[in-house]
Figure 1: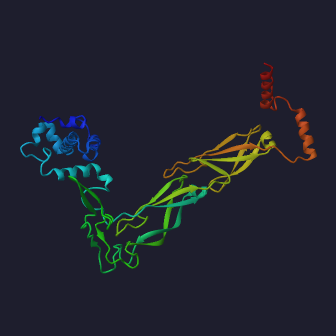
Figure 2 (figure 1 turned 90 degrees about the vertical axis):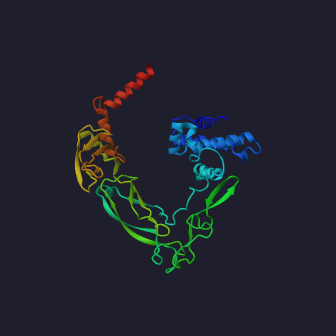
Figure 3 (figure 1 turned 180 degrees about the vertical axis):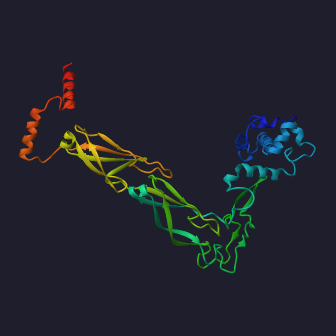
Amino acid sequence: MEKRDFYEVLGVSRTCDGGELKSAYRKLAMQFHPDRNAGDPAAESKFKEVNEAYEALRSPEKRAAYDRFGHAAFENGANGAGGFHADFASSMSSVFDDIFGEFMGGGRRGGRSSRERGSDLRYNMEIGLEEAYAGKTAEIEVDAKATCSTCSGSGSRPGSSPKVCPSCEGHGRVRAAQGFFSIERTCPTCHGRGEVIADPCPECSGAGRTTEQRKLSVNIPAGIEDGTRIRLANEGEAGLRGGPAGDLYIFLSIQPHEFFQRDGADIFCRVPISVTTAALGGEVEVPTIDGGKTRVRVPDGAQTGKQFRLKGKGMPVMRTSKVGDMYIQVVVETPRNLSRRQRELLEEFEKASSAETHPESTGFLARVRDFFSA
């Protein structure tokens, strides 16, 4: 019987990429697997056809040959895709390792390296807004796992060395046959490292690491923002068996300030002023983020929410020469705890007031009356 086109067998186009090819194969292999279709010759035949098609197309070189010559590319003893003869089991093991290897704990050959990278660490640091404005160099203390000084990270007692794992013979994986293909699993003896510690170091008990406290210097640039992450390379935990160290990440948070609120590079300061200052005008003294003071001229008739801009008095933009601005927002304070004389004066002022002295309130009341009389 004439063979079907391999692309047709897998239900993919001739222009599909490797990911689409693998996905289509996985779906069909699951569908027609003999374990799911016991005693069904048609399913077994379909399963073999699907595997033959994928074995031919999964390699870029074989796929290129098939695209050019068709099935003739694998006839007359040519490499590997045609037929399911004596090499069928090893071929299926290769294919299934390629497709389902991630479910079995990794690739086919060899275990993971015994030199494993150390874990990354996180350190939370809180600073004041003035420190964020000026920048600083901070000293921190971190408890982390460091390379054992006794065994230099090998995990073995000085004078001895790790031995090849007797269960997996150094491969880090063990194979179990199931039918015509085999499944690999991580070696339970060495946990995939391919070696075992026969004589552990007395200081670190074979881990190759001990916990110690380290003092580190952290440079905080001027203008740094809340939530910024600073990376200190190779300052995390030491790796296993002398592996490379992880990184240390400093997560910055900025404390709320008594006077200032920050919005990017700009600073806002809410300044209460008296009724008389708002009505007659005057000057108010306000602090600045650099630790100094400045005076702001308030015009007569200033209302709550009136905003004044002080150019260049904000936060620096990190790693640039730019600087934000400072905005003064005035809030008119209503007087409280009036004396009898103060009350009398305000009452006299109220009687002498007109629509011109209180245009907003007078206008609002007029609009309200019009609304209800409409």
